[in-house]
Figure: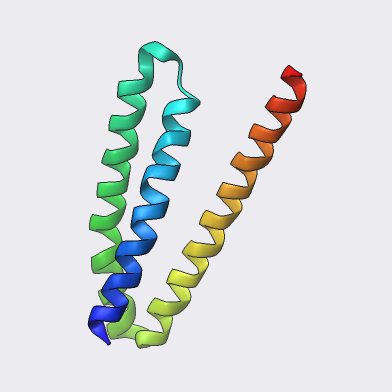
Length: 97
C-alpha cells in the first residue's frame, strides 16, 4: 500500500509542480522570470520541509486522521488557487480580444 501511495503522490507532484511553476513564471515580467522560478522552487522546498515534521506532530498528537484532514484541506486550498488563476487567465484572454 505504501508503494501505491508513493505512486499517487509522485503522479500528483508531476502534474502540480510544473503547472504552478509555469503560472508563476508566466505572471512575472520577462526580466524577473528566473527570480520567479527560483522563488517558486524555494518556497516549495520550504513548505515540504515544514509540512513533513508538522504531519508527524499531528499524527502523534491527534492521530493519523488529522494528517489526512490537513492534506484534504491543503488540496482544497490548492484547488481554489488553481481556479482563481484559471479565471484570471480567461478574463485576460477575453479582455485582449
